[in-house]
Image (cartoon, rainbow, N blue to C red):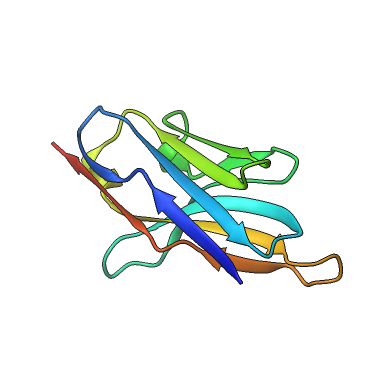
Length: 121
């Protein structure tokens, strides 16, 4: 079993910053890609940022230059620093981790429970 625990969401004024964290625990052999998604009510979940095991990053156009994703492999944790937040960034954010539970296990994806980010204007 694998668990992902998110933290760091909250309420902030426009222009402010938040840092999201997502820590994985359980039966983990290796971590592949890690990422953050967000989902507004009535809309599809969308990729915000991702980072590969090698450290390559990818960002949604709407957050480029404002958000930074990073990972700590020793702590099995992915972070997202969110700066210059805008009201349109308000929604629930989910972390996603792709990993293998054993040397011969298939790659499997896991989701965090979600954390609310609210940006007031």
